[in-house]
Length: 600
Image (cartoon, rainbow, N blue to C red; front, side):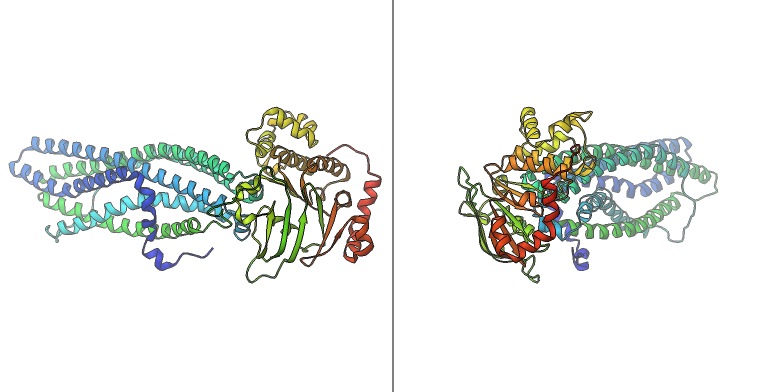
């Protein structure tokens, strides 16, 4: 993905893009802005009030008045602490909700993109956009922008006011740091604990997103984009709620530190006033000057840091909005055509040519092929012949470069992809299971399936017996991508999942080529049941799969070299004969005399 333009970053266009997301929370945002103005005004007025009141007290020589002034200032800054608490919470509320909406919208936009979109992007990078980049924006919205406004007000106001003060006066002593450190440590522990919990929750949500992205074919073939988007949104809402609790803790920290810091200044002024009364220091003008000088120095330092943070956030925002602005590839047409009901499952490829990019060579060149209703057609050919690419055109994971693909006479480009894929079941060579339970993985085929329907599908796929042997049965967790299961077990669960989907068209992408003989026998028997009455396209290397096909299509260099039965092709196709001799003779021997052993 290209880096954002520096000129666009300098213009801070990301703030303009955030306006629609901020609009629902504008009341809270305006409230936070008003509180910033009030608390800033209190801070800027503080030196002037001190100068006037202290000078009046000293001129009168009234120690009691000085005590009353100190107490009044403590009350004033207690009020300021409460206002800072309210402002900090409002800002946290806005930032948490905006970033939650941003993350949910970004995930929703990405999950509908086709596999080709993810083929040219790293999944980890997309996950980073959801986590790190959005988190950086959150920090800027919550802390950077409010403090940028506050410190700008401090700088301008203090520069104007300090010019009215004697510039020759200097002082280098100010604060009582230990109390502020203690307050920061006390509240900081809770903030740190909550922050850790938020990161853990967010990590789980991002892990789910990454899992969906890496298995996007499975998600889309079962048309679970919307379901996954809602599941992700639930996890993000949990993260948001924890973030709001962290906001309360941070608001307490802000209010307490504000009160403590300014309370320390009042204490210093009180002690300094005693020295003035003793004739060792001059009046309040000195104090006013020093406070403004400290304000100016702090504002300059803070503004430099905040500006760097905002520049960094602009780059992160640009990457996020680049993804949000990316058009949905292979989107549903404006007026989609419905598929006929009931669907017969007749598939035609007419003059199909395909390449993965304008500068890429043709992968398929002039394919004309028809799959009749309920027919089993096997695709064979050497690696790179175009078998998997051809199969990917049926559920419209890619669009043809030329020609067309039709289902029951309807061009697949005219159909809503979700409707099209709801009628197509895919069993890949290496099925990927989600890191949940067996039940959750099977229900991906039909979210509303009953337990009896789930068990029946597992029985038909020869999966029920080994699932029942697990300590937790159908509630057994299978690990990331099903790593706790054997290849044969994963494959049979994938078949059971498709049984639950009840598709009219099947795509079997070398579904038994990586298994041992016994596992292949069980999987092949399950596939034979699955294929009954369904139009099936089989990509296969093993003879045990090919010889069951009604027709075998031989691909070579992106073209159909020949098609026919196994016996016919052995007689007339040099390409098929070479493939048979090279790859199928050992498989034929194992089919004729399969070894004994326990199922995988």
